[in-house]
Length: 595
Image (cartoon, rainbow, N blue to C red):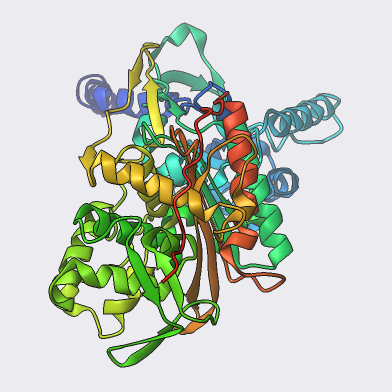
């Protein structure tokens, strides 16, 4: 019997040995492989963003993702039951995280989970603080004092964090990067795919939280994102942002924007708005300011839009700059009685004078000549507004951009038929307004605005951005005539924009003061104050547009509060780009006539 029992035992042992070796070997090996090897993501470095001169606007600096191996926090490993709680209590103040949330990560439902991320994009100083704490706990544990290193299972993966060296400068253009590393607004969002690059991976053996060098590893390197070069000039951006910020504060306004554009190429040299935000610290940012109001705000432009009405009148040969226009103090049209900004006796103006004095009545009378009927005149004017880009996206493809509102002429109300010619009854954004004046400055050819000059890939090669679309809107002759008429606006004696005059330069410009729709109530409240123009007027290079919303302190007239901003920013841009006066004699078109 003993022999038989021994034989049975041996038979069972041999069978089990065969099962282990032949049947379960692969399963055990797979489980060992799973427990032994770990795979970590190698984050791709996000591409930088620079201005047109290579000055850094957004960069990526070294950072660390703080990670942990939850299996190293069990009571079996640490010899204490509350290891996750002790570790979380030490890490929470360093990482700025909730202690209870860290405990959940360190004690997951999946007992075999080997990798969790406790915090992302921490500074090297944070990781050093954790390392020093780990070393201190290890040293105490080695003295036999009973101390346990509850942070033994905490590690760090190299990463990067986004930094904006100039603080809030150009924040509306740049945007920001979310906690997950994705662009959350602006160029960071628009070009996120190009900037992000491609993450890599590394796989290696680990024992006790340390890599096993002899076990080998495999690595797929990360591919860094492309570096993007913008068209803006940091110094001009600073001048524009500083000027609009000061005026918004002085006027106690809701907000304001300035756009500076190269009239010949369409490239944006500056696009500033106020109030803004600091993308380095979004915790203090006002949600309403975290965007680019210069392309996202839609508003009625007011008298700066009259230049499009004049363009239509001149191009259609309905009048010339010297055409006589009798402007009464009041004009009855449709169901309304129209007036100018100031009461006046009957004015005897030239068409040039209508623009110089910014007469609403004169503009209504002039555009009425665009057709035999008012309906025909409306259709003609509408066609020109569309050619100038009104009611269409600018071509920037910027996140959150509005195309404004421009109804088809068949849907214009009785009042709109007469208010649209002087800039009320439709809406635009600041970029569209600047583009209108750049079109006139560029001899009547509209160049789609651009914000990106090109990008440099991982191979170091620079790829220029695609050439912008160009569209002939008005003839070169009409554009030149308009430029001369716009000079009258800035004339000391005749026009409404004297505060925009720049000594030594011929300046073309137009003031605007429009009734403003309050976004909160949908009713008219306050004003949109604006000024638009270009210089040198006789050989245009730079366009500057400024608008301020709801100024409540001091003057609200566009010529008074935006004219000086135009002058300040334009002077700075002309000096920065070393554009000299042309030396040509200023146009001296008559403003009025004797009946």
